[in-house]
Length: 314
Image 1: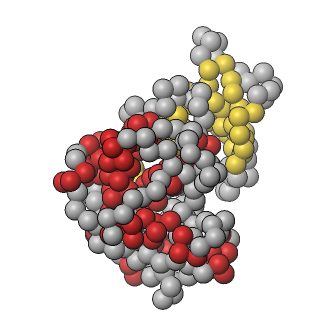
Image 2: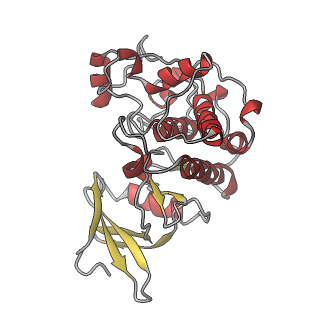
């Protein structure tokens, strides 16, 4: 199928992804997993999760291999790869790789996909690893949520789920996953990750950026909140007209609602879709989440994954 793993598309901690071709001529992405713990729980979890789904904004599983220690997942091939390669760009650029209409379309599509996982499936699926690397883009830049290795299935009536240890990626993990005294872990944890990801899409940069000169701009959500609060220009790259300006402001406002520290203050993904599709002037100013500008030493600790339940970030 992959011509002896000839065409490598990418690599991560899970293993490697290769391009393949089925007998009918259609292209697929073959994700070969390695270093699995125990009996391959994450692999079985991913197969079980995706096989329950059918949505335009969720990746479709074409097949899988589970033979001894050989484990692979076969997805439909996405020509544009993953979202992260389109959103992190030099801050001096005046033109974005993805224009604002496409960025908005991608943000809305991901929101609809998450709404489906939370409400549209027979069993609710909590993803727990929403980030740009796990959003795939087809030839029309329609986004597909992928990588369900950390997902958790629960009954629709369940609002809080039990969890041993933290799951997710630093920079996108909801605070309650690490500091349980902030509230229970639920579908609102995906909402937080979604908000942090959309802020990165908007800014074309990581939310924590040590590469900027001014300390006040290191933590991007804080900087954005201040500008919204003061009704100032957002100074974002590539805005060409009033329509795009309104679109960008709406995406920022919705994201700031999503990253509220208290999970009960975050909207559901259904509400997120409603807000994105609505008018900017119908959106209320979100409460100020616990945002701060970390010192450079704090940024360094964040980069290596040190999440402290201390006064600084609780």
